[in-house]
Image 1: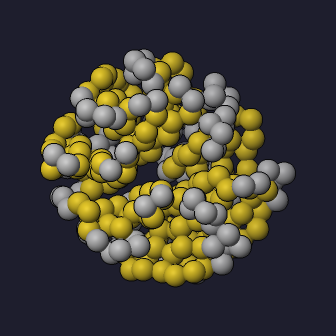
Image 2: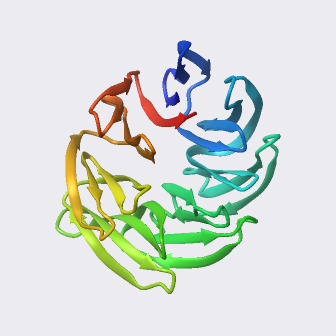
Length: 268
C-alpha cells in the first residue's frame, strides 16, 4: 500500500516501501482516476503515475481548488473562489469545460457508478447533481451553508452549517425525489463528510469525527480539532487533520505528520 498526502504548505508526499518522498508542490485536494493520482491547489492541478509517482501532466485550473473527484475519464476540480467546477481530461490534463457551482462551494463527489457528480454549493444553500458534461440535472435546497456531500444507496447525504442561536452541523438524508430528513445534529462547526464502504457515513466537525451506521445512527466519535478530509477504504477510515496529520481512525496510528496536511489517499 502507498499513502499520498497533499500538504498545503510543504508539498505532495508519497509514502511506501521506498520511504517518504516529496514528489510535487503543495496541494489541498487529491483523487485517483485512470491509473493516476491527481493533486490540486492554488491555480494548478497535476497528474502523477499511480505506480511510479512520476508527474504525467500539469494544468492550470481556475482559482483555489478545494476538492477533486474522478468521473469516468474526467478529473473534476471544484474551485471555491471561482464558484465553479472544471472538468479535465484524465489522460492529458486538458481543461474541457467549466460550470457554475454555487457560492463558495465546499465539496464534491462522484456516484459509485461514475455517472453523476454531486456538489455542495456552499453559501448558495444547495446540492447540485451534474452529469459527465457538467450539466445540472437536479438541484436540492438545503438549510444554511452546504459544506459536504456524499452518495449512499438510494439517497444523497448533505452536511450543512446552520445558524440558529449558535452555529451547528446538520446532516440531511435527501431522497432522489427531493425529500430531506435531518438525521444528525451537533453543536460544532461542520467540516467534511464521506460515505463508508459498508454503508453509513462519517461526519467531520471542528472538535470530533462521528461515524454513523447504515441506519444513520451514531456509532462512535473521536476528538479531532480540525478535520479537513475523511477518506474511507478497505483499511478503514483515515482522517486528515492539519493539526494532527493523517490518522487511522481504527488504530489511532498517525500515518503522516507535516506542517499542514489537507488530504490523503491510500492506494495499492
